[in-house]
Image (cartoon, rainbow, N blue to C red; front, side, top):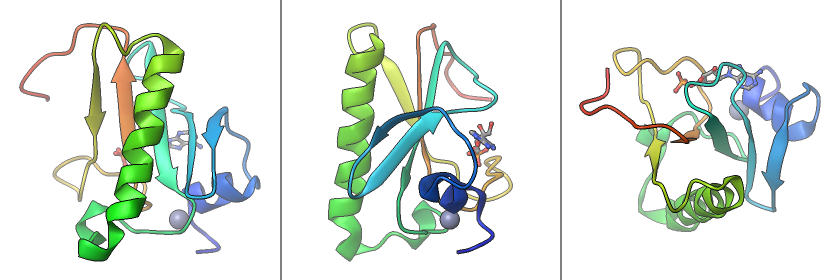
Length: 114
Ligand code: AMP
Ligand code: ZN
């Protein structure tokens, strides 16, 4: 997707604070952090949202979660706890139509989320 913001970050065409990159996923700091640690993990290939994920995408989802877990460890929040979030659609507040896993940590989280 040539016009997609997160595809451009994956390709290095828009600057971002990359914290992890491998053959499947790229992770970078959220530009408007909602917690002391707020990282987005995205697939390198364009996927619109988690609503498009089917039974054949297990490896990609696993790669996203494995990366998030490793980043949580590296950022020092694995022990205190963290939250992984995927928003879908307008009601959930999804604003960038490229699948992304939010990793949030470093503060006490409220439940239910707003
Ligand atoms: P969502 O609301 O789930 O679609 O999350 C999109 C996230 O992308 C928001 O938390 C934004 O702050 C973040 N975001 C938007 N543009 C950028 C950017 N250029 N670099 C890093 N994060 C961004
Ligand atoms: Zn994209």
